[in-house]
Length: 554
Image: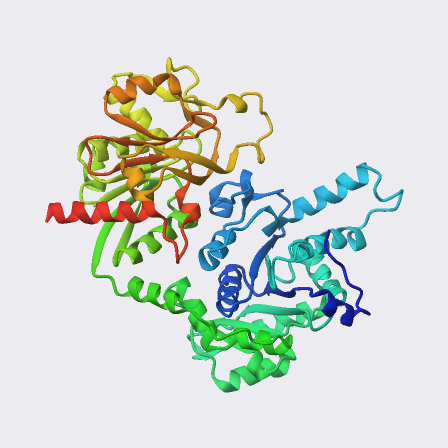
């Protein structure tokens, strides 16, 4: 249970060694980058030697994003403990190189579910259950849950949505109360807002920021630091005006100009001294100077590539690249590791036909078939797998991408003409991809897939073993269907290697082809473990294979 502290007991809080809390709110518009600002500040504080974690509170009523369409919410990120979470947790892990968990992502739906469950169990002893105090108490309990573990010095909490949204009101009220719970020297509020540049007028406008802060003040929360997104630099007079009207110090008005990449933001926030403002305001002694040499080395390789490759990302949600956010960022990490610029070409699997496939994929140095659910776009993915196999183009299939490679191989090499996945075709006589045994009686959709980290044992001598350099690995999963082990002998006799299996269930986790430069499929999601400082080895090897293919063509 979290350690709540009365607002009358600041000295007691100090003696208890409570962590410091940073809350990041947003105003004016969504998609300003609260997650990146949170991750960047966390990176700077981590680089000073502090133990930091970040949590995201989302105001929607879904229990988690697991049942949301990627067009609605972007990628669903999965943690080691099997939580389906917001994609911002991916940013947190990629920046901090530290795993997150279910506790790092809480939604309004989960808050209300917990409170209603308690009410049904009689926990409130007949009291009328209300937003204040019952919902706000549950929110605060989750605010402080990570701090109660004693594992962190600083906890950053990002509150989703915009100040003024109806959905966000209980979170803002809980934040107001939280400042009194832990004391003024233990909690700080950063408000991210927008300072637009009007081209016609030729000037920056501060009014949206003023109104955003006004709304926050009306809810009883005074921001300590303002981070102002803008296309242009903020001159001194604009900073003074914002400080005057928003009740903050001038040096607490932080400029967040549009960046070339998200990985530039920690460096930009360092120049703006965002981390120093936090340390000063909460009277926290600096443990050390910021040590981000490795981060700068990564940026140097990323921005100064010596090579470049073209890789096709074949998927059904390519109109919204955020649906494949972790894959995209994994290519950034792997590209930098190889001092190579990876040009991703987003190709809708719906658009692929036998007539245009050469036009779409013929000049690519590599082909990745992305994860997904449902029948739409399936045939295009299968054709992409065949094109990569036949033309010896480096191939990487993830989750459904691996399953498509299996189906294609069964149809065209094993000559099982109606080979299919049971997810897409319930009448096939050859389900080479079948529903997992423990999924057959499940009817509830939310949170019931095979989720989280599972072990996998790799066969020595295979490409995937060479990539990892060890025989036992652990990777994250999100699926209901699996390779049908009844067909293993047929596949292996025809040249497909089952190169990785789960040691407990025998589930086929990875496949590859013998007579191919680099043809690998994984049932798991390697993209969920790639970070700036630890690029995933499979993506690194895939990019290397694409470079080799390009050299071969030249």
